[in-house]
Image (cartoon, rainbow, N blue to C red; front, top):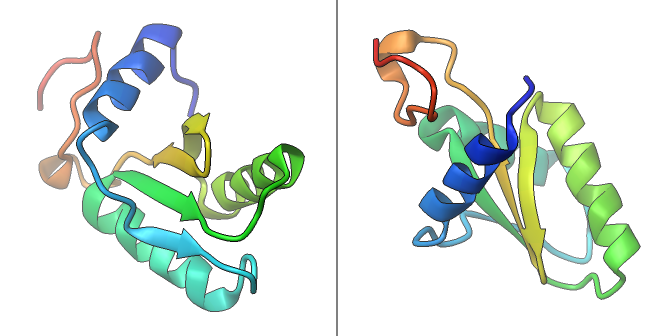
Length: 105
């Protein structure tokens, strides 16, 4: 899924008020973390993930990229120890987020 710059900005604005629902600890991307991430994306579409133990910016970027590719999501922003992910719900009736430039169903 490709997002325009304005759509990414819009999603980051929506995510500002959200709290992280998935936390990645010292175990890294375990099966449990990925299962929780999948469930959160299925339920919310827009999810914040917090990296608790990683200090290196490059490692956090690699973890975020691995999470996005593993779940079929898009990382719309990373700041500090937090990353924001978006994945459109497959059922149009259950979609919560309407992106700029799209029509409502």
